[in-house]
Image (cartoon, rainbow, N blue to C red; front, side, top):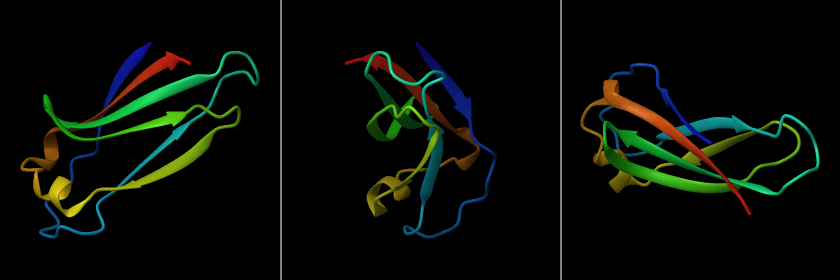
Length: 89
């Protein structure tokens, strides 16, 4: 299963630091299969950053910090989206 969400339009903060991405994941039922989710921050089709997490039973909020190079690669803050792709482990 996979889905994409658009991010709120923000203005360029004109800084390479403190770019945070927050998302919340969890299973709709506890137990069952062990799942991994791949999360990709994209500007249009361009990959900016990616993370992989094991999906917890309870909804959990994660905060990822972009590197300066990742933040500097963003040229259009209105075109950012997050892709989530679930995988059985």
